[in-house]
Length: 467
Image 1 (cartoon, helix red, strand yellow):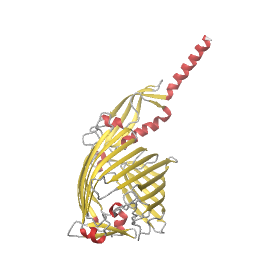
Image 2 (spheres, rainbow, N blue to C red):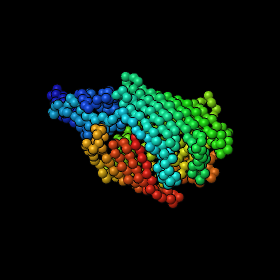
Image 3 (cartoon, helix red, strand yellow):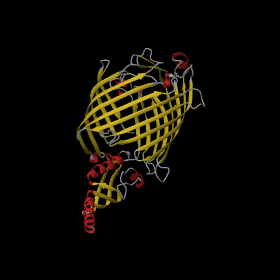
Image 4 (cartoon, rainbow, N blue to C red):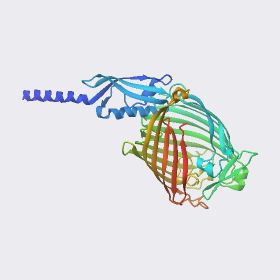
């Protein structure tokens, strides 16, 4: 029996030692290339730390994910993660090497943008009128103290006069889990959307006065207990004023009861679970968003709403160059009473739209949106502009080109403002194809041809510039 136990011990030890070759042990991490960014900020984004054991079979994927995590911060133009092995017999190494190239952090950005909801509305319905453009300047510092803190100051003129300032500090404690953000902005317009008829925005313009003024400020606290999970709690104050001709004559329901002033406090809770490989244009992973928004906390009686909004993003890698995108978005009102027209926007604004319906807005209290795409990568390369571009961080331009097949569906419930709007309380659908260009990792340009359920079709341009 002792001989059997001894033989079993020798066999078990041999198997265990042999198995060690299938794993890597991280001894230390070396960071190179960061002149501004603190080491602790970079280490916070890694899914590997000293002392971790990595299975050899997943090594490439783990290193790629570390690189994706660093690029997703927006701080770097490139991030290469590799290992230096010190012992080939045990596959133990002393060094995880991170080589990064930092972006340009402080830069002014000239403002030249559309005052309309999207490029297509401005181009087709308003005949490319220059008086509907915004111009000005924004000053960005995306790494103010080297701790990924974000400072933005802007002054904008033209269609919308806007003055804004915000500062975000993501790491208040040693564990780098608590952050804070402050924001203030003031907007005013000489033209105002006062109603929706036929699912088209109705505008009034007065060159002699500003028809609407908006002042907003907020304080937001962030909690990031785990790498992939974020919690946001925001308290804000909003003050909106509209000219009497709108609230008294054109649309008494604009703020409700013919009011020309609307002010309220708000409280928002936002949960995000982020597990995508490349956030600006993912090909694998998922993202979950949940928002509970209470507008009106009893201090003022101008507004009393309670919204719950959920967004789910799923990306499947089907082949090496082929992937699919699936986006589900829904909102419902827990307070079912009639709300002011100004606070009843649903589909047609921002990124919440059914492709092929870019020329329409659909107002309501509840909505559902499904967007789907099958995407194939036809090109991937890094263009080296060399001395053609004097700014070193912009000399290397990662570039990708995808083609896609798209299919969308949506629905808006509008029990109060559905009259004379044929797309309310109706299932919307569309299909089409697209050409998607991605440069500098987070600059996305989409040229899409869509056919909607109304029989309308055309080309539509959408951009996502990441600033």
